[in-house]
Length: 421
Image 1 (tube, rainbow, N blue to C red):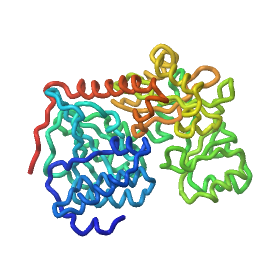
Image 2: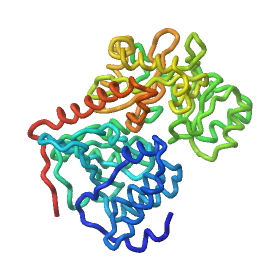
Image 3: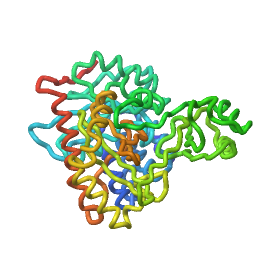
Image 4: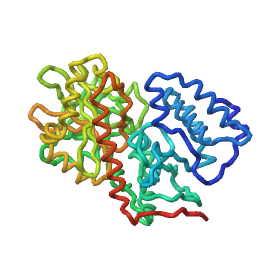
């Protein structure tokens, strides 16, 4: 972190500080743009005689995109110590502008719903209010029509989500994504919630301490003692990890022992490994958004490896795979969604969230195989229109559904006037 940034910064006004925001800066980085000119411009603004605290928060986003997490958190902490309200102006100014307030928490990509991507190109004004456990709300709250709890489920956010449930209950406008429903989406919590949905298979997820797993590994035992009716191979990951970080497939006690020796965490999630290869030997993982109870296709990733991520799947260089993804998105309503209509409806009903995202696959017997459900998985429209010409229309439909959901939930009488002490 540039040490000069701390010298001139002082507390700003209570009104929202304007920002470029995550989506705009991420789009530049995704396209391979040189972010150094922007970096220098933001530093100049953050260290001016009248410092721009929004520039400081945008600097933290560049650090996040560059993979410098410690710098990201340091810049972000400095910004939030000075200002907790930030504003992303609408791309289009209209007379029917919707005003959204999003409650967020300090952190990285997986800390919050990346709502900015869903609002790209819209006439929605987004105000972001950063909150923390035990911290009172600021004296000034800007006018808004609807609010969203964008704080994602995590160990760190458990207490905050409990507090947000109380705050939302007394809020004068509708607050979407109820905090106690978000809090249920731990891996084992989601399993308990969804395990008996017809047409859905979700592998049981168990949470174990290091000592419990060490006992199995040390004695070369079976898993039956701690995981009824479960045998190797298994997949294991540290509690709180996302995006495949720390995730490994383990075929026996020896590999479990080596895995534990390579990790420092105290607790882990363990689940049976499900071989979900299709008939051609490839793994297919689907991302689906649930908006106001309705399902929308986000992407399809196809890979030779069981741990599928879109960025490392063979999509960019495979016309065959892209043709299959195009069909998935274009015919989503009449094919994938129709095949799994009952399961998708049940997931939306039981989770009872206005917006959520699932990563899933299909089993050999035609069931929907659910890997994960949450509110922080990214849904975007940054892919090249030349390489992925079919994505723009699919994402436009999804984004329109999200904005329509905001409008329908807000209602004509739901307007919160600016609050000031």
